Length: 148
Image 1 (cartoon, rainbow, N blue to C red):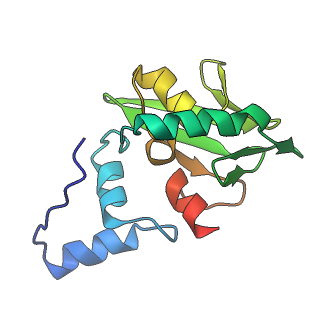
Image 2: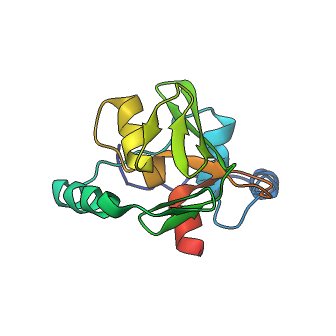
């Protein structure tokens, strides 16, 4: 997946319509268009060095009060997650401090769950969108982590 960005020209009415569909801080016009077009979640391969440090971080992963903690991200118990990959939507949830995909598998991190689905190394913070209890809309995990 390329990280290149491109400029497109739209008229003011299209821009206003896209902007009105942004339902959370941190959501971009690109996120809205991806949702409208039912495109797969943005994925990004992680460099091998980062995978090693992430795995080491999870040796002592902390859970408390049913919340899930990973890579500076806290997700409350009851958080719902979704991602699109190869035209199919996948779901997960935070249940009793565990990241569980809809097939019942438990994962130590969003990246582990994404890799389980894609059979490749994936940055789970860019792959998954979450809707936490009380949230109105969906946001990517990296946006949630960076806004805290």
